[in-house]
Image 1 (cartoon, helix red, strand yellow):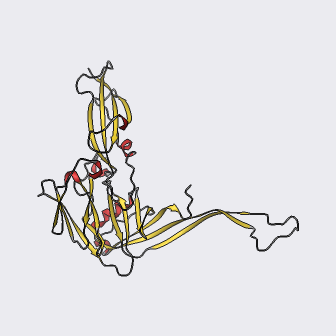
Image 2 (tube, helix red, strand yellow):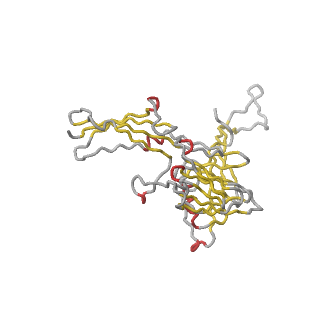
Image 3 (tube, one colour):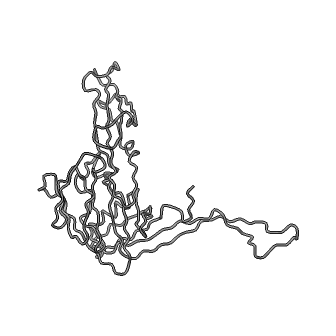
Length: 328
């Protein structure tokens, strides 16, 4: 009999693949076939994304979930198929994105979860590089080799390579331990004048990525308020004190912003800044605190060594909170 409709039970959970229970059932979806088609499409990406709640406090946690879709098939008489129903499809979900040019449902990186081939670190400072544990067998930081293990648990699917202080190169290999998938050059930056500021954002692969801003920073804030005219006459004396203001402020607050400069970087670093601009989750590490910010710039010019000779990226950020604490 011809297919008429499907019922999809969507389970979203953490832990190991297939370890869901009835309490992990988040959605039940029903779709009927369109008469001019021979298949039924069910989009679950946005539904799953609601259950990936990303937060960051300089801790580099693996934010991934399993999504298991149990699909029941019904024929034109509304009878469930006796074979292959229900079918269970299980996917590992990360909060990343593909680009239009990559086509529908693009396969993102299965090894190094970073697009740029260069990172910049302050001298004598360790760094982090995200990898996808399922697709990496080992990595080498300079001459030190580390094997990667995958337990199957969501809490370690994204792992972060520790780039030791003053390292110069990281090589990431496939699970066969011989196929080199990516080489990342580590640039150690000596900055004697300014204090480097670390920016961490969720990149296109759904992993935390760091970008350091080494050069001049400018912080500012903008005040918002409302004023009104008040009656300052003392009714008993029919006078008023000149030390009393006729105009008074209320609903007073301020929003802070900061402008940062990367310093000179290579052309390949454009991809890191592009993904920073497109990220919904961005933080700055200032005075030992992790502060949420929003990139203020709404346009980005891709700089090249041919056009610009030396490349420095300037980024404006709004702090994602009011200056005066009004959290209630």
